[in-house]
Length: 233
Image (cartoon, rainbow, N blue to C red; front, side, top):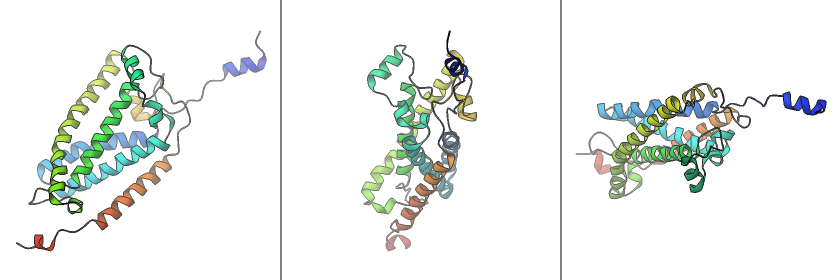
């Protein structure tokens, strides 16, 4: 017969930790809104608005990458970035070791963040030679800036493909495997899915975002102006 201490220990439920903390959810849905808004403003010629949306996206992605180092348990890279053997084993039917991103989904998310970062950065050196010149276009020689900017549209097209794959994956897990992915990204957790440890305070992510935004603003202020000859026709 188990002791009273053992029995009480068994009856104590495990803490109901949040799976996705507030910063992760806010950044996820902010990016969800920023991407179509950025596309639309570029198509309609609202270049100044497009630029600020791109800079906001840059701050959001960099903040998320920083949160991957110091954030809550399931937001950290060490929780979901696994070696090739683990990824292969997952595709062969092995269970995921974490309630967050599975081994394949973790690398997929990381690739998306890298593509978003590249998209935002190449936009800062983009120019159409008529109405728009990125804030950091004159940091480099025009040939270098133009070469970097040439990837801006290409990266966006690649992003569209990965976003489509992401949506299809969510539908697959929600409908066929009955694993709730959308609900935790809205409310933080769902039945059968909870975090492995306490969430970090959201204000820490806010501090990171403010610092990243402040550094970006400082760089914008330091960015070289167009040559004097470009002010005259």
